[in-house]
Length: 158
Image 1 (spheres, rainbow, N blue to C red):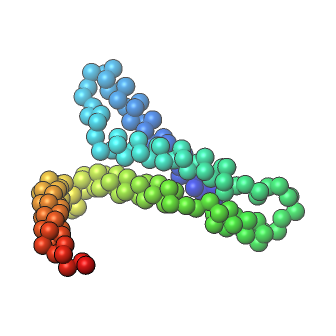
Image 2 (image 1 turned 180 degrees about the vertical axis):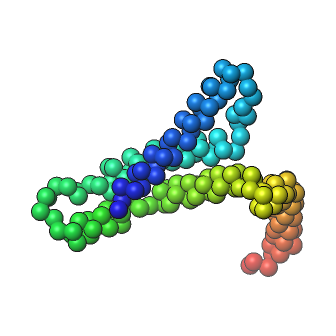
């Protein structure tokens, strides 16, 4: 059951290698290949996250599982759950969240070529700059009102 995690992480490791090989081959053929793109960023992040997850899985989760060959299936699963409970902490939750974001970006990049969802993805991609401008204005106004509120009501705190 848990060996599937290792298989999927190794598949993530191969994505970056595939892009590097494609870049080298197309460079030798004299064709243009857009190398710094969103797919390459997501593949690099997935590559780094997969290295950490494989190491964590092999050292922490599989610890004390194979010390006793006479373990029942229930005790084996209880040891796995215990290892997960002892070794899951916030950095790995952030690592998993980063992987999910990268996979969503990768799917969105691949969906650009779909005839029904592709135009929507491209429109939303062009809308990102407008959203960032709105977010920047929102942050500026929030800080402005926070500063003005502190200046006006500083004496009411006493």
